[in-house]
Every structure is written in structure tokens, then in C-alpha cells.
Length: 185
View 1 (cartoon, rainbow, N blue to C red):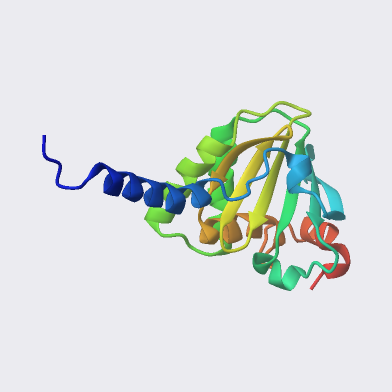
View 2: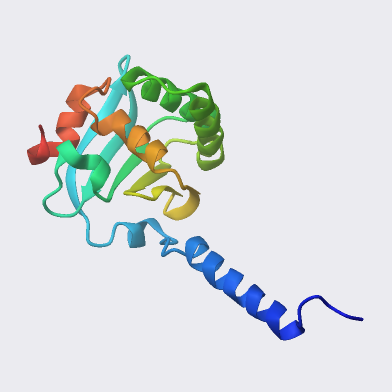
């Protein structure tokens, strides 16, 4: 049987394709929350309450010198330790609503980002922790109870998602102030 490409050339093409694909897929994603937070310190922490109910304890982890004015350009982690049970789909919808309140989303962004968060956020019970890690220029990583659960490879999503807590336009300015501490601006 005659092949249009000799076997050695096909193997070379396959190896080259794999080499180009593999680094993007195995791009140093930490498998655990503790590994993702290595080298980070607690910047601030506060209990978030809504209508008198304790919702979660939020804690911001970042390297020394974290500047809230440039949060989109810095790597950090935001941990939410839940005090109540919530459906993952409800967390995703509330996140979209908060993102829309900061600045409008296109219908495509709202649809794509809701789907991504529904995959990333499981149903939560009291005591569970979700950690989101913002990776500038790459996107977001989400950890559930210490283990990697999902990545969203979209820098615009990540900046907008973490803006829920860190943007000056947040709906929870007191929580933002508590989280960013000395980096408050």
C-alpha cells in the first residue's frame, strides 16, 4: 500500500503536533489548592453576610505587594469557605448577575461563562471551600475542598469573575476593603 507520506514523516508530524499541544494542556496547573497558594500570604479575610445570613468566609491570598488597583495583572487566590448549602448552578447564576452589575456582558459571554461555572461549581454544603486562582493572561482555576476541579482558559472571564470581589464597582464594598487591606484603593 502506498502512503502519500512515508511512515517516518507521519511520525514526525505526530510528534511535532503532540509537542505543540502538550505544553498548552500540561501548563503547570497545580493539582491542589495548597500548591496553587504556594508563596502567597493572606492579604485579608471577612465574613460575607446577606440579609443577615452568614454565606461564606472570604480570604484573599496573594504575593507580598499585592496592588488591588491592578488585580487583573497579578496572580492570587480567593478562597470562599461556605457557611450554608447552595446549588452549584445557583452560585453560577449569582456570579453572572454580579458580573453583569459591574459591566454588561454580551449574550455569548453570559452563556459561555454560565456554562463554564456550572461545570466548575459543585453543589456546596456548609464547610465546603471553593478556591479560585486568577492566572493573568491565562484564566481561572477552581479548587473544591483542596483539589483541582476545573480551569477556565479565558483571561476576560477571570478578570470579570474576580472583579465580583475586587473591582471598585463590587456590590460588596465593605467586603472588598476587608479583603484587600493595605492594598485598598
